[in-house]
Length: 402
Image (cartoon, rainbow, N blue to C red; front, side):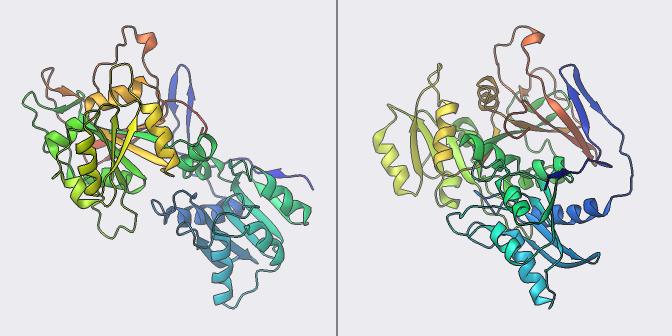
């Protein structure tokens, strides 16, 4: 039975090329039944944002006779997958899923994970008639095998329904599962002329409370938040999520501190259970032991050409810790080094309607770019306005999540 792939329709998107990005106008179009139910499944999946790592976000909806009889989403590692949650929900309603259509945002797994059995077997056992998939799983242990097994069992499969959105919600997972390194987002917040502080270092508050709330939402969706030691010494940040009614797990702070200058009384050492302090060989061993006594994990990585923490080595170490995503928050030199080393997958730049002038502190430090042709391009750009401010999001390369 051949796999049927649904074309996308009615989904606004940005078209990109090497020449730049063209934003298309929103087009209001009626959703097909498959798109309608897949949209419901995607909304369910997003409910667990920040809670499932190192697993993906997955939502599922069971439909029978054009009626939703079961809903579910994966709530966290070790808990039932979305398909099973939807089956349980249907059973609670007294409904049989035999002969139904299952809408699931990610290809059902066909292998036994560390904590859960394969969902494909449960789908076959429940005699589901049809499965509609948002996108295929890039996990090498799945990668189309789940769909193949369903079809071999006589279940009709349609894949690629609202595929772009289904892939986007799991861009962290896809990067991690294919490279064993975290997806990296660089978050910046500045004035319209790109300044994060005045010449005296004053930066409170360039952005509005709503901007800070949106920034906390990015933290909530990330496994770790990385800053340089300069930011810690200057601002003593807590680096935790402070949102009302947030169920997200707290991200782990990662401090790039090649000489272990972090104070033992730093707020992030007090608030978090196991913050990561990335340093280099030659750092004070006694200081490292005292930090570890405070609950920190001191990770010694290689030096880069400037004697600082090497990004590539650090991200490889974080991947071994099952850190699936990293949000870089500052400061200017850390942002510049991450961009220069090519480790940033995505940027989110918040702009406030203020002007500081040339003597202010730029949001990105020197990168040694001398010609425009060598500058970094950002593609698939999305601009979102809120109040008097706006955020620009885009990707530096398509990579594994493209």
